[in-house]
Amino acid sequence: MTAAPIVPGPHDEVARTAAEALAALLPASEQLEAGAAQPGSEHITTLFAAAVIADLGGPISGRVGVLVAEELTAALSSSPMGQLDLAAAVQPALDAAAAALGGTAQAGRSVSLDDVVTDMAGDFTAVPLMGSTILAAVLVPDTTLEVAAAAPGAAQAAAAAPAAPVGVPAMPATAEAAAPAASTAMPAGVEQHSLPPVPGPPVEGNVRSIATGRRGIEMLHGVEMEVTVELGRTRMAVRDLLALTPGAVLALDRAAGSPADLLVNGRLIARGEVVVVDEDFGLRITEILDQSAAV
Image (cartoon, rainbow, N blue to C red):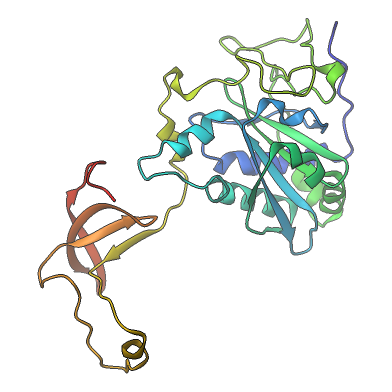
């Protein structure tokens, strides 16, 4: 049985433009390429491990979603900084996709894979993001694409988008299309993968584990994190806090000259001494804590 042909949609290039913008900022251990846009279906989530959806604001209404494979979720859960939030990790990528559509993205939210199709609120278009396998997919409602395509400059942006890479397999849009085409050409060294023919858990081999050799932390290089320098702490009663006035001095739980703490997302990872650089405060790192000492 051969795969059913994918019927191009009227706004596929707009969808691919948004997918390419998202792919450029999505944490990944390899460069991602946008494949051919195709109609979404209830089987689209079968290959993936998690989903994040963000509502759109500004002149564009609707939403944009991203499905990610197990590699990214595993890298986030095994980060030396502790468990990282998937929605926060992919937010910059969602912002880029929203900007490509002509709008802004609100805060992304993690959703159950079972609820993805419902959250799309109707027909939607899916664009696979390819590395050595299908590592992610971008989802955009067709109503959103229609508005984005009608916006000034959308046609020029879509026309400038490069064509889908030759030999990149598209994700089947229906159960009947799940069997791989016998005549599909594949680039050397790239394994062919397709969605399972029926809804259900991922078929073994469709998703490559992070344990196959790639360092999961490399997928997080583009993730923004909050870095805080802490000089010390103190405890105060509410009445004392309310009595504070300009010029009041608080005694901290640290002696003068003691190193300051460097925290990443609230986790202590290093210590150092406070310095002044061009009239701005800075921190010269004097000690990096190992994982057992970090709290």
